[in-house]
Length: 275
View (cartoon, rainbow, N blue to C red):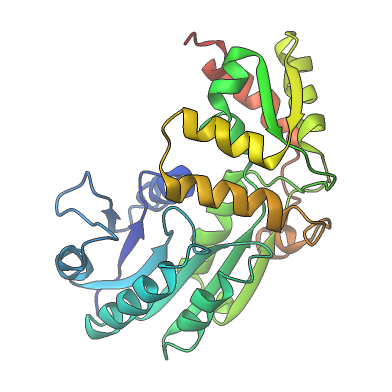
């Protein structure tokens, strides 16, 4: 039996780190991405078969998010294709507290294959590798008003958990909820980054409608705008205002904290770049 592992979204925040770890262990890895050969495209199922050839396990990250309405049909089709190709184990990355995404989780759980569900809170790295980076570089953060706190998770912890789930059957049929060790508001998070950068970052909260209008002015896709609105109006309602010890349960160490992330990120120089 093949022991090849397919990492979908293998150039993304978690996928890239999972690939690096598996390759560091000299394990056979296939990166699933629109920019690899053979290419993998969630929106083109004709690309799936070649990528799934001789694959034993798959780490599934879905873009832009499992919560979008079209995700259920796509995940259902992919899981069926994976089974036909002989895949044995699926590890699915999902958002924490996303009831819509649980429909996709259930498809994986009821697939008849081994499975592991990894639910993650907001990524710390969104401030350095994602949507918020430009605002940090501009020293000006504008976000929708929210009263809830978030247990931001370091994606390095997610990658370590995923690698464990892929390599050890003890994690089969388990659901893990991954959080960082503390609850922070977005304003708290930005303030900590500003303190370490030793630069003032202005923080402003606006209504969700004002924020959506701002995103549209940047000519972002409607799918992305829908997702951002969903995240800020649905998920940040207090449902995720708690921390778990699942990182420690899997890895035998505590989850990395936000201050550690900020110091490590500052050392990379990413926040010193100019627009």
